[in-house]
Length: 363
Image (cartoon, rainbow, N blue to C red; front, side, top):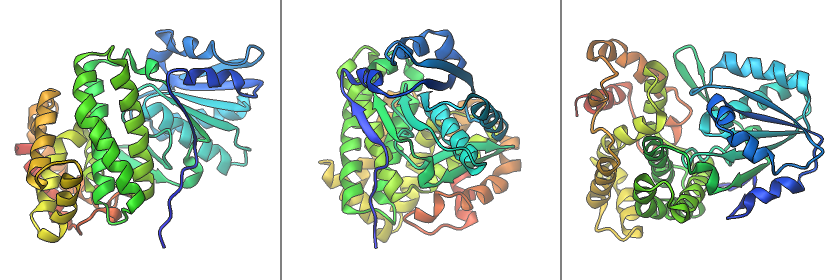
């Protein structure tokens, strides 16, 4: 039996931020990062909250949030006892908030209303039951329906200040989410429809917002595509592209979206090498109006190039070849055990994962 669910209520469109004024709350805790706090973006958002609400801000979130950061957040939320928690930021902020609330609930705290407001169009974390945290040098994917926010507010104006490089990385993360959800071994008619819609938007609008940060209609569409892809992969799962990126990012601390973008053509070729696993790519290509899987692969490569993303891991310049080779087997082991691997369309061995890493490193 298959299931499809959406736990978060969505608020979106040009005036979505006005929803904040209708919330019933007396004490709001905003979980964010230092840049958004210092830039005034948090203050801009908080202006829309009910006038009588007391607002506290926790701005210690860093990229790839660590277990130690989450534990600190759990202590903080027990002290504050808010009745509304807002995760305001990119995927790291939203994932950190999910983990904080999740572990606080496990310690007996009654969960407050949880609203996620993304400031990047990439992770879809505002609607997913996934969170990724870092323990030591390992990225750990948490998957539980209790992680999902109660509400998600999509307002493209909060993404306007995102630099082109981050726009590219997060946008390619959307593409990877949608593509992996479509070819997942748990895909359904419902997740396929969402994945296709997200991919159409990414191919059309991501180059626009990369070139012009003020292209607000395209930014709004990308925010919605990110959310749609998040709903798709929450219900269908992901695959080894994410498993490989999690292990690699935990070791070498490269932006997750950029790793997904670099790895994706290598993973696609691996799957397409056998006809049984090529079939969903052929089907997806036809739904997108392309001639077949080879054109789909080339469109991904061309988009990656237009966004200035490297062709291989070595070109990043931050991953030393000898260090990479020293850790490649350990990373493959971590990827094999990653929570995203079971829904990969093709069974994989650890040697397959090692080979994929090496291919993606050399190009």
